[in-house]
Image (cartoon, rainbow, N blue to C red; front, side, top):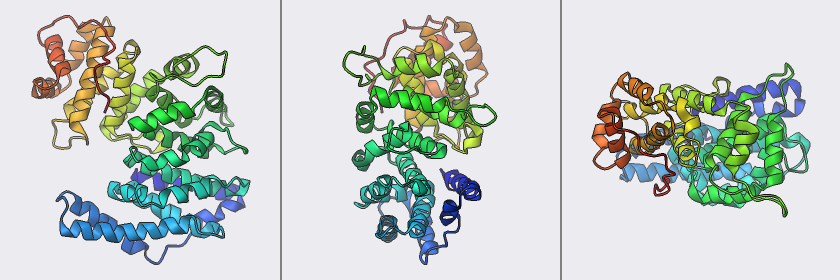
Length: 406
């Protein structure tokens, strides 16, 4: 998420050239304690590996006090746009770069007040302030999606993402709001609340927003991909529909309305391959996805009826699983192996493509070794070893409902 603040500042500079009201956000001066805050955040990250040491607790207490002061500035009244912008930009920088800081923001007791005081501002000239607020929500949700703080302002966040409020949010604001919702899908509690909040009229508005094109007629790939990813992470849940409408899952709606016409399964495979290389997807978004999140999405889709459509994800899945054995293993390596093996087992079962899958496995260095390492405690890894090495037939494709999602 380090790229987010750079991309955000670039966007604000572009907007200020078009609209004078955005000048507040690009001319914000450094705060008096900014250097001390950044130094403290870096020191806390350095101490985190050692655990709950005295130095770690001292840094955490100091950083928490700085962050609370920023949050107070973010909702200070009367509304001073420049003052709020300074605070929000520094919160985005710190939360995006340091997971410990994002956790402290979410659990500060002031995060909800800062979010609501800005999200409920509906004046058209304040969309820059809304953009910063939503970007902070996305940064914190990226790091700590399980925080219950988000439940207090989920409705205005959903309304911005869906263009369902009393004013027309501009495109970057919608995109970052959808991104925040995608991150929240990796929390079980937030995912359930989100499925109830996204009723059919809001989903229709969400889908309609992706059809708006740029001046040259090209689609906005980042917007489309994020909406597809949001529906994919809710694929198994029922959508709240109006009386008289037929019940439908988010996956059913997504497959018919967006995934097929927008080649989402190709984009998902490309995104997973990019994540394995540490590259952003879409490239223009500068957003580098953690491997475990995309693997989790693929596993969820494979478990709920879309394994055949995920055939192109097989090789990136093998690559990501194999990388867990390298010195630069991605975070949450055990989770990646577990979910990746479940997804690969479902893909092998659903696709009549066994020999091609075995060839791909032979050319993926360390993949089989990773399976052997985890075969004893992971039945899916053991099944895949039988499939790849002993040429056993894949298991019948089943919805692996017994798997508890992480």
